[in-house]
Image 1 (cartoon, each protein chain N blue to C red):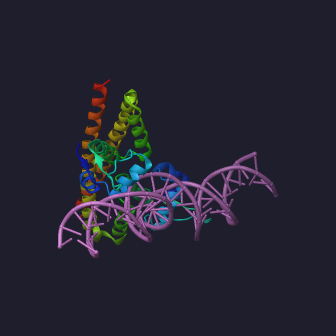
Image 2 (image 1 turned 90 degrees about the vertical axis):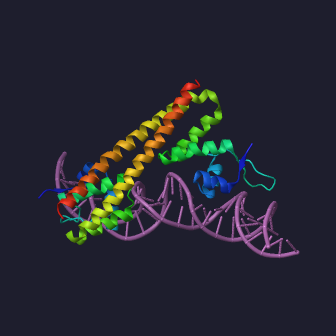
Image 3 (image 1 turned 30 degrees about the vertical axis):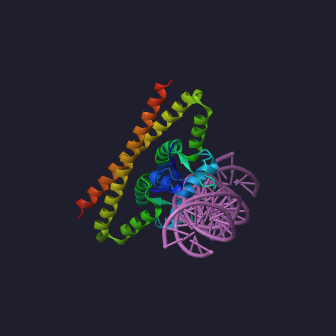
Length: 119
Length: 119
DNA sequence: ATCCGACCTGGAGCGCACTCCAGGTCAACC
DNA sequence: GGTTGACCTGGAGTGCGCTCCAGGTCGGAT
């Protein structure tokens, strides 16, 4: 079973060590394993979960909602329908963001064209 | 020349009155005209600029950069090439956001599919 | 005349998501 | 065995972008 040092996890996930500690503190990350000296040793599972967290964060999910998702995951397989619901709602959210951005981008492009035309 | 009360501008732009005052205070919005009683009366031009601000904000431009853009606009037509440059960079930024979101969205959709498959 | 509601100012406060710090432990390499 | 550096904890601090508040002015409807 491979384990990872904080430095390796920082490297792999792009989260800072402070952020990892913070996530553990608030319970977004379950209590991470320690070596004899009390230093964190992350498991493969931790890494996988952090990948999910990265994705949800980068799509703008607030920490409070990720926390709710984390609790569902911990609560066991019977919460899978709830997890699907949560992710579907978030997917809709992301869809909206993309569409909104695309529309705004058009406005920006038009503005650029306008500026070009008056040069 | 039509002018608009704060309430009308709130309605039109979706910015709260506190936000409008804040934008004026930091110089993102040029000193807005007043009536005899000192109440704000926004011009058509203010409305147009607020539309641009709305667009830039919603695409994630930080206020500091909008401020730079505002200064270019105020400085006159000779800054148009700079404005184009700024907007083009931002357009790239937005493009990146959209692509990133789309990729993350795929991850979410896959996760949903996986959850569906284990039900 | 008086009341209500929209508006004003300056300044304090807030929520989010980190980020930094002091003061300390431990291991490993020279 | 001394130094370096990665790591630890609890808690304070930060940056952004608003948001709220106290205390006050004005103008129009009743």
